[in-house]
Length: 468
Image 1 (cartoon, one colour):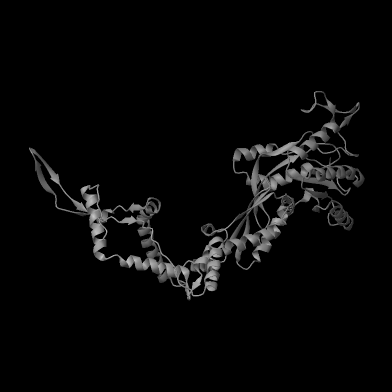
Image 2: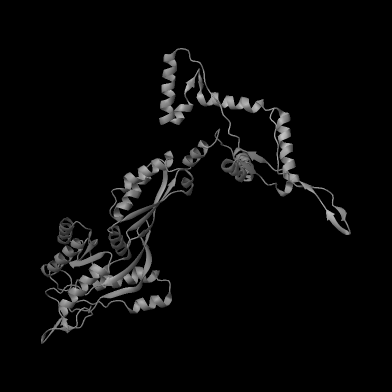
């Protein structure tokens, strides 16, 4: 108590939070709810104050990390030298939500402060003094300071320490700051709270923000990486690099340092902290890769590299035509794969209408018009190809059999690449299938097409086939 907590909250609200509240009415209400502050040893804060009513988004620091802020101004721990918690009859008694009967003010203050620390705050700002503020001795503040720090460390709550001093640059004050820094291993900022500048406040909030623990890090990568398989060398390399850097991150301060390290990786063009949800402990990092990486990946899908804009337009035009054709045949091919037979439907441009004519049937008249349009019938024909060479000796035949059996069971890719008389096995089998395809005479193919046309157009359901 009486070391500058309310003054700290009031100045932070006036300089940083209120200017960022968009709603005028909410800004006025927050202004009316600011805590009271005054010099001297008399207690001014009687109960915790939560300002503003709702968290306000602000950006601080050179990285301009956005986060939402709301202050909980505690009553604090009663220490020697403060006044206002006793009267001529002894300790004042107050009613609290946590007890059915009135309890001493100093007990209520401790309970309320502990509840704010444990239940209502994501991070603590411990305000203490070097003994130059409001006549409070360093020894009196140190007792409560140690108790609060011990409690924060016990429950794992992140915190920073403000060493309030009328002479923050004094040699003794800086010596005490270094002692606290070494003792508690958290940021300690020596400053005169009643004289804080905007830069001072932003620095304090930045130090506090960097102490938030990080539970999860979300990495936003270029969306074109989603097209690639997770095992693609670009995705794999990026994941490994990001994982190596981020594995050691435990605080937001570490995220900031990790971003600097990621910027040093040769294929990363930029890396920024996109947003931070300090309450949930989630930080989002956005990564941009160098343009040449994208170009190199594109070239992997091409038969030859494309450098000029003209060649790119030609490629896109050809790809569009191929996509249009593929879209037409895709369903038919899929149906042929599953059922053995697939048919494409004609497009409107392919219809060739005949001239309409009037028709008469009995005493009724009508109009008839025909139209022709091509459809493609895709038939799955399971072709067989056999390879049975005479090797020569039984030994060499057994050796080839052994190699083929092993590849058949363990590595099909190696099986097809097996060299037979200097030619891969898959090429030998493909050549056998090609020979069978060419063996079907054109007249037979034509007759097959005419047969299907008649079945489709005339509704012939029966088919008798003679294979000669």
